[in-house]
Length: 149
Image (cartoon, rainbow, N blue to C red):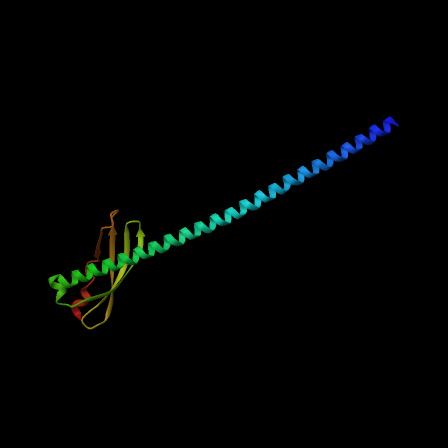
């Protein structure tokens, strides 16, 4: 009888141990799933923030590019209004659109109207230094069309 009680106690102890082990294993599995879910959620949040930063950077670059285009337009118009040869032609710069060629250089098109009112496209090249100072130039002969108007 003592052997039966000892065997029964052993079986009960084994069952209790198995139940505890199963509970620990289940708990570890649940914790691993929670960590995986949290990691996936954090990656989604990180990706969203990265996309937001990229959109903001693109918007800021576009604004800077437009501001630079306006600055070039003003400077070009000033040159056409003050240079002796161009002043007599009464040219009007209506738009400057720029595209970034590299970090410090832009290429673009200036829309310039002649005395007849016809719009002409003039290539313009812009260089910007680290301080934001810029200089621009057009190709040689870019305004030859204005002489014929």
